[in-house]
Amino acid sequence: MPEILTPAESEALLLSLRVSTVAVFAALPFAFAAAVLLARAQFFGKTIVDGLIHVPLVLPPVAVGFLLLTIFGTRAGPGAFLLAHFGIRFVFSWTGAALASAIITFPFQVRAIRLALEGADEGLNEAAETLGAPWWDRLVNITLPLAVPGIVAGIITAFAASLGEFGAIITFVANIPGQTRTLPLAIYTALQTPGGEAEAARLSVIAILLALIFMTLAEIFARRARPLA
Amino acid sequence: MSIEVSLAHDFGAFALDVRFGISRPGVTALFGPSGAGKTSIINAIAGTFRPKQGRIVIDGRPVFDSALSLWVSPSARRTGYVFQDARLFPHMTVRDNLLFGWRRARGRADAGEVARIVALLGLEHLQERMPRTLSGGEKSRVGLGRALLSAPDILLLDEPLAALDSQRRDEILPYLEKLRDEARLPMLYVSHALDEVARLAHQIVVLKNGRVTRQGSVFDVLSDLELPQFAGSAPLGAVIETKLGAPRGDGLSALDFDGGTLLVQELNRPEGTRLRVRIRAEEIMLALEEPRTISANNVLLMQVLGVRHDSATHADVQLELGRTRLVARITRASLERLKLTSGKPVFAIIKSVTVDTQMMPQLD
Image (cartoon, rainbow over all chains, first blue to last red; front, side):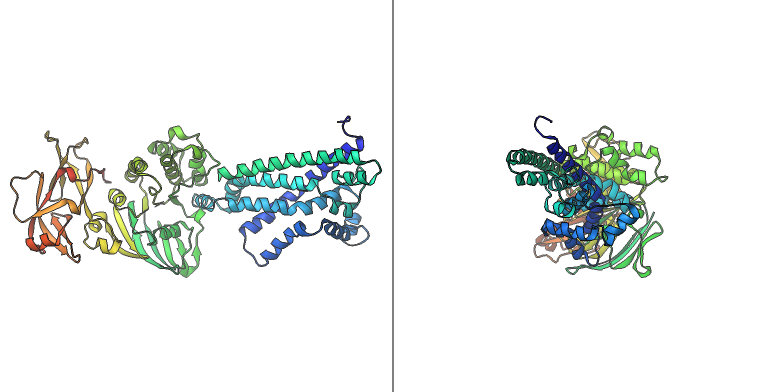
């Protein structure tokens, strides 16, 4: 789309898509495990775990970014350890942006998967049990297939929310073109630049279109989750 | 082919405390009003409900024993459960539903069994359909087939007909009868519908308020004058076992039973067919002298075995002929006029047209 977008703009768009994709799919296994735990298990401290998972929903994203910076900053602590022993560096890198997005959008995924699991008919699970299926068999062959539409809806919602993440990213990994300047950061940068309003407007239209597309998709899958069950 | 059940559980609102056994294949009905604890009992046998105390042994294999803290998980119990609402897996074809338990019962059910049960239940043409496209009756049949194909040691049926309208029930009942007669499997059939029990069961366990109030053959229990007391408001009517006699050519068929013959409207079934007949108590008339000119075709000389007259309006009379028992309901006024007491001979008058035509072949 060279006629519509400048190279810097399409770079920001592609980076946003990449960061969000990695963020959502890297978090998915953890989100699934957390959802299964919350939906099926009874354990001491469940309320606290539930609360912790949902904290990013209500915490200012800037605070999340700052927290991440404290943990993964390369001068000390886990950040220094990761850099020294594994060569992994989150700060000022697109992987850091993905990590920040993953944490912010984690509750969306857990919530959607948990709802899908809880909505699954307990009676069908019982039927499978009397037919000789142990718990892991039921999870794979009954619960999961019936929860797939809900899980897909969760993935899409988290993806859309991740595309809009700003505060945590700019605080944790700064605003580096090609590295951490995602779509919202590019809009912000354009607005800070004299005469950048037109660019900000173009990028905002793209952001709106993306949001509309993904929310429509999420709605379609969420609706499909119902008639089956 | 046996199961032993003893259970105790306090639900707060009522307490379940039952003990019974089944020692041969065939249908045992768990009969009683709603809330008597019937479903809790089969759930405990299947393992989807864990009672506080008790012991359950299926085919010599203990699956629950509270004294030994023994608890076999439902997936390892080998019970076939037929649910009232079928509970077919909505994301699988009929075929995959049917084979769900069969695939997990490797080695216990051969491939020939699949074809046999599919044919028995008339499911050949439904194989590739999804459950949501099936009618209520078809869903029931698939649920039944799925449970049977899991090669169970016992089949548990939780009011499998209750969710169906009367037309669908009449569609399923013949399949259940075929199943009862062909599958050498103990079946525990939960029902609060006496007509189903009368048609299907060999044995009855009657439950009321969480306790077993009667247990015995369907013939003994349904001719018991106490039935309304221990089963709630059950309509009275004995079931008798008969064998179809030679064709008569006068529009009637003769059903021979132990002690006599019952004439009913002509039946198109082969001679010698074993049939079960239910005669409702209200449809038997009693007379002290033999009526000579009467339209009713059946005048049976029977003996009064017992009278129950705790109602202000009517009385129930238990009658015996050979080893066959019937129950008649007459008014209090008639009872006093006829002065019926135990041991007194009496003529039971039964119109051929009132004999319940819901008859079916007997097991054995």
